[in-house]
Image (cartoon, rainbow, N blue to C red; front, side, top):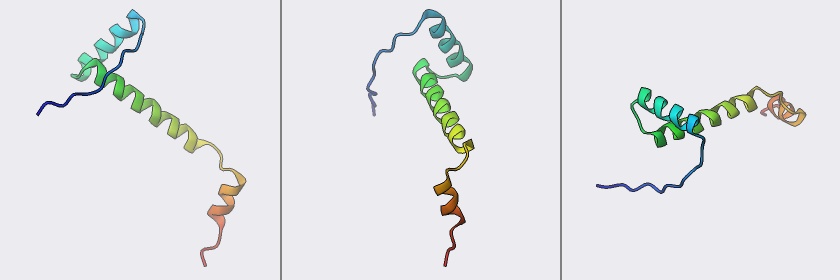
Length: 68
């Protein structure tokens, strides 16, 4: 079964493209998959940053609320 992925072009500088190709080679995958992995890693980093932020007063109150 052939699965066709939708694609689009993104302009990047030559140095970044070479780095993507190098990383793809190290990972044994394609440049496109490497970009996908990089985007996922950035998203995970952002979630981690958000989780490390202090809770707002309403969030603390909710967590401290009595269950019964």
